[in-house]
Image 1: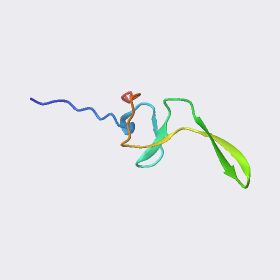
Image 2 (image 1 turned 45 degrees about the vertical axis):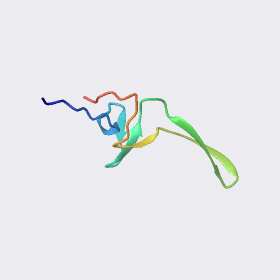
Image 3 (image 1 turned 180 degrees about the vertical axis):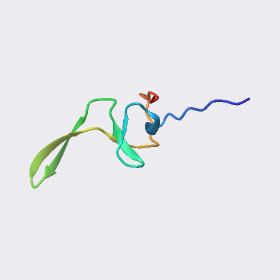
Image 4 (image 1 turned 90 degrees about the horizontal axis):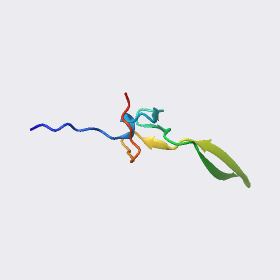
Length: 64
């Protein structure tokens, strides 16, 4: 008996935006704000989480 396997990794998800061969942005939720210090000043940047192509999560939705 054969079973069908489904890859539920980021690279096969409708919410994933490929940036490089093995990394991309997860666009399932709004960008996250990150605070960091540069030259004694606090800077803020908003960005989508970067994930590896083989990463996965519970919000997976198969891409068309």
